[in-house]
Image: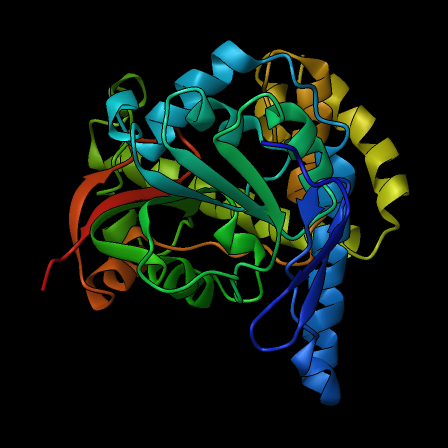
Length: 324
């Protein structure tokens, strides 16, 4: 089948959407511009999208083996579950996980609001079963109940409303379909925090209630400091902030000190971009597992698994949409 590089798509409603560099741009008109609150949200969304586009077009694409491991661990999917399924990658970024999903069968649709979709297309163009679209997760250009699997890794909390984005992507899933997401966790209340599902190599350090309380206080302090820093960084020009993150990338090589930054990855380029990722986007929300589990329950899901995480809380849930 010949690829359409440029042109227009016409909806039955009369709306016309462009195809730019092989990527359909399915973004509706901005209906929120009429009010001050709407204009503010629109501007914050634009900045968030711009900054992630800037990040993902610079992210190295040579960590494929690492990304395979991350993808199946964090989606809590098995490779065979993708075969023959229609799958939505909700917030595909540069396509690093879309590429992994595409290599394991199924028809994969990757959607992102940022300019990174063009890198995602370049990364996945050899897969006939992968399709990249530029679109808004809050207004997805698909009918309800069409996908067999929907996953979203670390994206929904960067939208104007994590809950509304969750509801939007969950609505595109068939009954009996699988939904897997993870979002940033929070220190929250200690009674909830102490039951977070830590990986075994981390939980062995936290056997006593005293150790768990100290851990909670450290996470709470880190969260407060991070929020304070972000009150400044989200207003900095993103190119200036990117340059400042080189210093954090260097600190990320120093034992123990590296845990005071926002990335301890072995590769300095990844550390640079992960620090930028944390400090740059205006929209960044944190959630307790109890909150996310309620979203699943309210949307009619049965829970099948929770992601075990490291010392920094990460709320990952796999659920199946009830048949009735």
